[in-house]
Length: 278
Image (cartoon, rainbow, N blue to C red; front, side, top):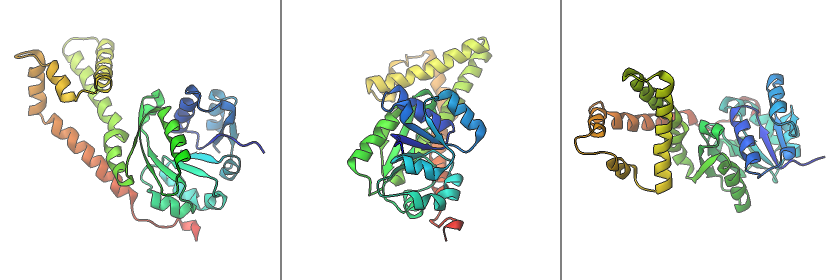
């Protein structure tokens, strides 16, 4: 039976983003990519986007044909199917979970393996500008670590953290796109209020956020220093910054990150076996 280079359990947005990333990077050939997706409508979409890839309806078949598998399903789905997956997880398998809120301790307990990585990517992976935090279980060796890094570098940047720090990763980058999108929306609305047409205001707002982020990444200079460089005495920028400080902009963002991280901790919950695991 043909062995595939990478399996993807799930065929949703994150699975397709990862597939697009590894293919564009030339890391994996499309014909060596295997999806497991039971939904017929989603299968049709996958066949249209990845015509040379394989598709299975059975997770057992996926594990039979792939040694390295990304578990790209929602947390409640992973918990529901964990007991049925476990008998098919063998020592040669390397598993990567992107299911939010399920800690490594639960997954190693459910799936009876220590060769698991837990990754917190974000929605910007769809544009290949994602940010992913990665934590490894004790049984993951260097070749698997390097392979995992290559997969997620294909959809953006990668950081290695202790698993407990993934809650903070969730607060900063996992949920972070929502904060930035809200800021783009607000910038755009402000432009409209100041007299710009909606399409022009949105174009300027989104490009401004993109440009500011690029400045931080490309220069390596702290954002506070870059901000000072565009803040002239008695100018327009300092007038705007005064309003943001008065309205608690900085504190609101800080509190949002902490709130998201705390909610991530709450969702992790205590370890327990899935109901059908016996």
